Image (tube, rainbow, N blue to C red; front, side):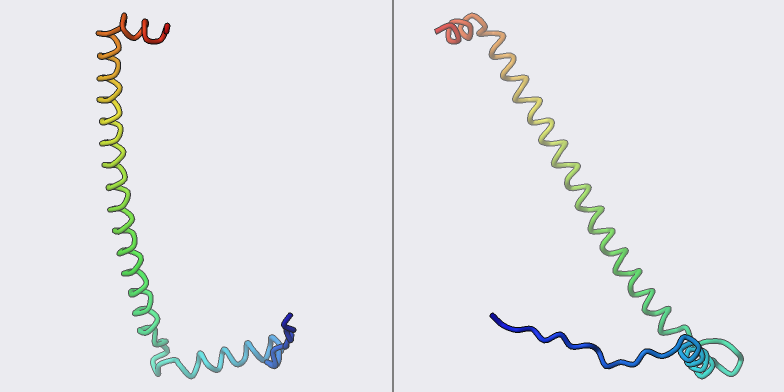
Length: 102
């Protein structure tokens, strides 16, 4: 058996106030001179994700449509086969009864 060493991460835990102060400083450093934050990379990333979601949804819609058509064809085929079997059994009822009796 292999022995597995459990290693703890070495990252220090900073107090909440220090973490909050660092986030505010980072926010202020990324702000534009007019007070606006540069959101362009984040918006571009969201647009990319939205494009992939739409592509996947279109693919799912196509799959659902294909499944609906297959179900309709199989239901129609089953109805035709059952209709033929019932017609044959009805027209040859006496022969079916004699076959089942033997």
